[in-house]
Amino acid sequence: MVEINLTIVIQVVQFLILVFILNRILFRPISQAIEKRDGKIDAWEEKTRTLQETVRTKIESYEKELVEVRARAQEEQQQLSNELKEREEEKVGAVFEEAAQMVASTKQALQEETKRLRQELRRQAEEMAQMVAEKVLGRKVS
Image (cartoon, rainbow, N blue to C red; front, top):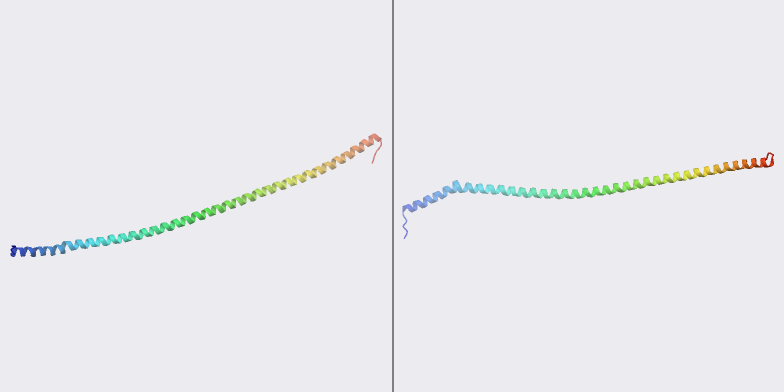
């Protein structure tokens, strides 16, 4: 059987003292350091999650705003295109109207000139007829 003598008791007491001292000097500080580090890591992870959520929210907001800005830009571009077409149609219409007025005024001027030339030809024809009649008759015809 196992004999319990004083050396075993001393060794057990020494072992317990060593465990107590190691617990105080080594294990507790290491445990505290590990817990402190774990706490910091947890805080960093939480801060990282918060920042990631903030970044995700901002990205979604920016993407939504970008879609809205693109839609407004496209709408403004369409509006400007429509305005440009309207102005172009107005100018083309004005040019056609001006051309029609020029054609009408030229036509009227030609008609007036034709009328004047016909009157001039009638007058000349009457003068020639009167001259021919005077020569044929040998006297002055009124």
